[in-house]
Length: 416
Length: 179
Ligand SMILES: [Zn+2]
Image (tube, rainbow over all chains, first blue to last red):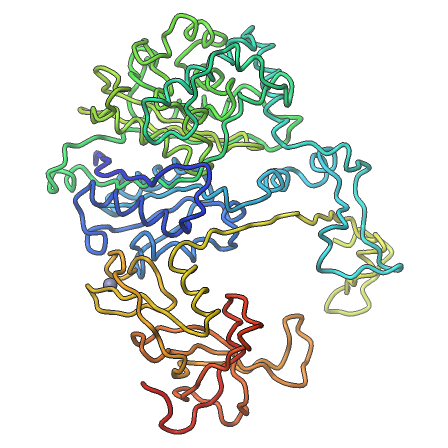
């Protein structure tokens, strides 16, 4: 298993909060087309396998995999869809190549979340129907009772005792987790507010970012509490966009005359769904990282990782993840932030892309947005946000509310 | 799995569970009706296609590389992986590729008048390019693969820019339509 895996092409569509002018298939097509051009390959001849990452409910199609081949170039070719973050797609492609089975693999993930009018409902639907959903929202909703006919003998069943007034948005889970994180680490709300300011300011240098803003930590502190201690500006807003990666074996990369940029490690991990049992410390990220570090022979991540893109869909998540990834000690994230170590010139530049707070929450494409930034940085193509001497980078993504799972990928410029 | 110890199977094939058992709460279950709504942006190809339907016309897109005319239109060719190049007017006549006759409705209830449904390759488009639709004014022993058909449109005042602006396809007289 000495075969090495490289990133030979990346592409992405425009990122916008709404994309009413373009169909989701066309958006995917645009990103993949750019990735193939970047790799210098003919998709209809040179790609062995195709992987998209999409969640049926976000898309609005059941059996979503049926609808992907055309726009990614995969008609009558090996193709699969992973219900998860784009990093899981990269991990699957990595394995397909690493085993020697295939040479060139496409990975695509996207968000067309503006097509979905009720994202909160999908998150609610992802929670346990017996124990968690009834305490989040009522189940009797006469407005939408479409299909079955209810009679006196067979009335519509009622579950739970909550009413409409008690209904909360599932993002309250992030508020709960933040509460726990602040309490256990001594990190303050101000620190989390600083993360928002840092990332939204950084986003000015990333043309892909849709939510750059000239704001300060005070502005964030002044924004409304939505799920105390979580405030409105600490939540990454939704964005539409597609990202595509072409991965290949090192031999294939050399044949194509592409300077190899290695994907050297990958890890993933899922915690229990029980809210009353799970840890609120990002343990999934810690274990996924351990797996990826081992694969990449990274013994001292804090010293060896030059740049990190971590999931920051809620402000505190950036600090929590940095600590889980062993890029900071527990509670040390806030200190690194205060010392400027997380900035572009710091010792562990984090989310210089603007992160999800600056770029937007692109759902299943979140992991690829992180990985894309690492690739662009290692290639030295990041322009005004370029981090000096970046050789090894880490991309991490969480599956989002209400999950406690995620993945980590490591990329390296040389050696590997 | 009935949760009812007193229920003794009378039928050797198993215990029948009916709505009464469910609604009578003899069985533990959980109920959920998601409030899910989507509003898909259609993009240039589908939007134009639907606009044209409203006018009683069908359009496709041509890929200059493989010279195919794609219906329904797409902005990219899935075969060449190139963007498609131009709009092409398509006839509302065509040939049945395949079909089926349904004797039950979507709730599996028997229906008196069977539903004819199938795929039509449209004249003016490349082979195997067309749409799925209903057939009307045709009998079960007449319909066949290769049958020539023509669209029956709704009145212009009833059209909404939907695939159902065509009511159904009916048999075309021998030699009818420009193939
Ligand atoms: Zn073509």
